[in-house]
Structure formats: C-alpha cells, structure tokens
Image (cartoon, rainbow, N blue to C red; front, side, top):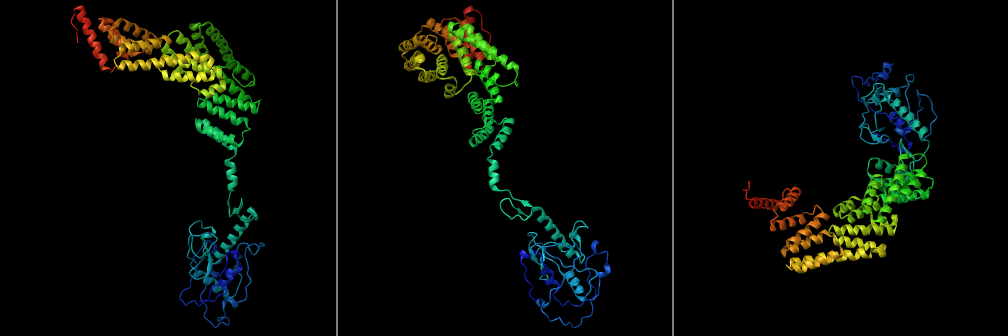
Length: 565
C-alpha cells in the first residue's frame, strides 16, 4: 500500500486530509453482498444514494498512478460558506447528493471500511486508524456512539464525517471569536481554561484588606488568636490604617489583654483622630481599667452612637474613686473597703489600682486570707504593660501592696521579688517594705533549719525576731507555736495559734496544732471543735478522725460516762 502522507498539527484539518483519503485507489475484494453504513437519523432522507452494488471492474487509465500524481479535486460544501484562514480549523470536502462520478462510490465505500482505534489523548491530537490513514481522535461518523440521537456524535451516515468536521470548525471559530487572538501565557487563554497569574494570586493574598476580612471572620468565630495574627500581618503591610489597629484591639480584648488593647486604640486615634469607634472602644476600656475621667473624655469624642448608660457608669465610678482616695488618706479602712466594692460593681472589673486598694484595706483590717483572695481575683497584667499604661509610680504602689499580701500568705520569696520590682520603679516608697520582706523571709528560713535540728529555743527566738518586722504574720506565729509546744509552753502555743487562725481562718495547720495543745491541756471540748472544723474541710484525713475519736473518748471519760462507738 502506498505511503500515507503526514500532516502536521499547525495545518489542523486542511483540505489535504480528505484529499489524501479520496484520491487513493484501493483494490477491494469482491463480495456477494453490499456493505452498507449503519443507519442513522441523518441518512434517512436519501437512502438510495447510500446503497449501491459494486460495479464490474474495468481497466482504469489512472489505476497505476501514484496518489501524489492526482490533481487536487475541488471541494463542494453543503454548509454556509465562511471565510477561513489557512491556520483555522479543518476545511471540509463533502459529497453532495447531486454530485456524480465514479470516485463518489469509491470514497463512500472506503469510508464504510475505516474503523478507528481511539486512545485517551487530547481532543486535537491525531491518531492512526486501522486503514493507516491519519484521522482525528473522536467519532467521525463511522462508528455508532452512545448519546443523543440528534447529536453529531451518534451519526453514522456517510455524510457524518463531513458534518463532524464542519461542527468542529464552527466550534473553533466561536471560541476564537470569544477569546480573540490572545496568546498563551500571563493571563492568556488555552482553549476555554483561563489561567490566573501567580503574581496576581500572591498579590491578593498579601492584600491587607483581604487579611483584615479574614481576621474579621476568625473574630466572629471567637478564634481571637488567629484573628490577631491576621491583623498583625495586615498592619505589617500597611501600618497607616486606623481600622487595622482598632480591630486588633478588639481581638486583644477577647484574649483579656486589656492594656495592650487600650494602647492599640490610642494608636488608631493617633492615625485617625475622628475615628469614633476607636474612641468608644477606648472609653469602655478606660471604664473597666478604673480610669473614669479618661473614659468620660473619650465617650464625648465617640459621637452619638453609644449607650448613654455607659456615661452614667463612668460618672458613678468617678464618684466612688474620689471616695476611695479620701478614705485611704484618712486610713478609714472600712470605708475604703466599701467604696472599692462599689467601684468594681460600677464597671471597673479589671482595675488593678482598685483591687490593690481593697487588698490593702483587708490587710489593715487583719483579714489576710480575704486580702490574698482579692489579689488573686484581680487582673494579672505584666509589669512592663502596667508601667507603660499607668506609669512607674502607680505600678510601684501596686507592687508594694502585692509584696505585703504575699508576706501575709507565707510566700516570702515572691514577696521579696515584688518588693524589688517596686524598688526599681520608685525606691523612695518601697524601702521599708523591701526591708521587712527580706527580714521575714530570712527569719522563716533560719527558724525552720533550727527547728529541724531540734533547737527549739533558738528557733523560737528567730521566729520572734521575724515577727518584729511583721507582727501579724500568720506563718511565723504558727511556727513559733510549734516551738513552744515542743518546749511544753502549751498556753503560749495556743495563743500564737489563735492569732494565726484569726488572720487566716482556713489555716488548718494552726488549728490542728491548737487542738493538740488543748488536748494536752485537757481542754477536750475546744480540741473537738477544732478537729471537727478541720475534718469538715478534709473528709478523708484518717489521722484527724482518730484524733477526734480519742478527744471524744477522753471527754466522756472526764465526765464519767461511757463512750458510744
């Protein structure tokens, strides 16, 4: 069989494709029956044109000519004529029902014998059929395809190939008319798939407004850490937007970092002085932090879009703060305690200065356990943030009271550290507190070493020296009571334990030590009361239960009545 001419993709579907097929002469073997195309809806109009018997073979003058010697045949199309470039889709050659000539029979007959072997490849690729002719991948009408009967894919008539190619040409023209003559690359078009520039994608990801929007979504979901991270990225790209700072402050509020949130609001107002939302947010923060005067100022700058009750709260808070300062100067600790409670109820729920004044009042009223609870309940801001926001003097006062509270609770090392921090900020006001903290801490440490060495008299002296610096220290009182109990000074031991319990009612070690001393003094009723209190707090303490039973037995024995189990 003669060599088939190769066609490149740049010619797409030119006339040479069908010319190469139709101009070849093939010797088909004789058969008794005619070969028909598979029936289809498109070939029902003229069935007699598609059925024929093979005419008797006669010598043909062109039989021995090579396919390349045939002159090019003109093509006739039944479709509407369209102007096409040589580089466009394939041009079709059709055999109309009105054309005549013996080549028509051979062409139609040859088409019925072509069976394509299809493979999975792109739609524009060329594959080789079993007849060794180059053909388009996809149905050309010679094989029945599943699908819609009216579609060109399911047409098996001899004209199906022509219609298929013509359809592909029209489809290609439509795509080109929509996309223009853009080349592939950049934001160009490959078929109907649009490529987006990677640079444009990166630019969108780095758009601070997009980052802000993503942060807002995380904030609405309560994921404040993630929102804060996105706001930080937006600020890193564009630090001139007040909204980014304001949104960052909202995320910080959600995380409980109020001082940092207030600083962000200040920065937002610096960037945009008329930013009413930032003024309103800062006013609310100042109210919670106990800065009533500043809160009122920013409420006035926040426009009309706010709750009037917030101004009322700020005004009430300002009144209570004035009363607190007055009571503190007069050392009226009961009034100070009352006013601080009212100030906290007015909205200053995160004001470190108000909690510090309340703890100081409780210390002076010898209610150390409540003072420690107040300190633990109050806000816990970093020292550097407090110094930056409230100033060094106010922060030094906060640390001074904190050191005193730690000393009352027996946390002597923490007390020393707090006093040292206060002295670093304002040495003049904290010298006495730092000296006392060091003396008490040293006394406790030295006394414990002496007690473990069974040097009870020396230990008792050391504890007494520590109490000279803080005579209301419940830990030193309880430790001295232990020494006096070992020295069989039970009355003095009971006195020290009672003083410690008055300062710290839940001090179970002091209560047990007092109960033990009362048992040795044969005061069984007092001992039973202490044992019952401790047992109610520690239900699983077997030692306390046995001590209680023994005290009850001794009490019954003392009264001359048998003890019931």
